[in-house]
Length: 276
Image (cartoon, rainbow, N blue to C red):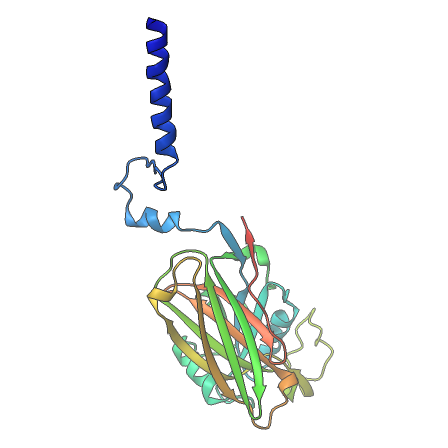
């Protein structure tokens, strides 16, 4: 009799437990709830996704500058799956324009053969670029979809964030390839132009900065983990061959470039991200 009563009590307890588990309300167990700092919350929102980062090279050059041909050569020979070169002509270069002057001023550059990597690292114009010298992962992915519309190039942009971020800006460069102009050459030993004339009349200049939309703010409410921020910019391309144009977009925080992307004006590039 005693065993039967014990059995009935045990059965009643089991029924109550099963009944609680079948409720629509889920039991959430937390280790030390309400003790997580804001910083830890930010890290907890990290999605575990890594974006392959490309590295921005800005060469400050001029057509009359004999040293500059070596800087141009090093950037041209850099691995294009890693590096994004931009040629910024100023200080009396034949290819100088107002945009290049403004960018040089913004970056406090006052001489040719200055090479800035990711907006804050100086690089000798004599040295080759090595991917191992730079950070190759990011938490921001960039998608670019340029559309030629008559004499305008509409650049549709998407930024996807894989971590909560803040205080971000983006910049858009319009570059032009296959510009033929005379280039002074100092015939550096080991350079592919070593045996070329001191003045190369048909030098082919690529990745030349023509126009830019600088330092556009990304609202803090838009740069949350897993969010996609969409925007667009428009360039006038009257008189230019769109086949020779490139669009470069980079995102930077207050002290570093987080990622850079480049695409031909007649192509598009989507996000590229991988699980860690």
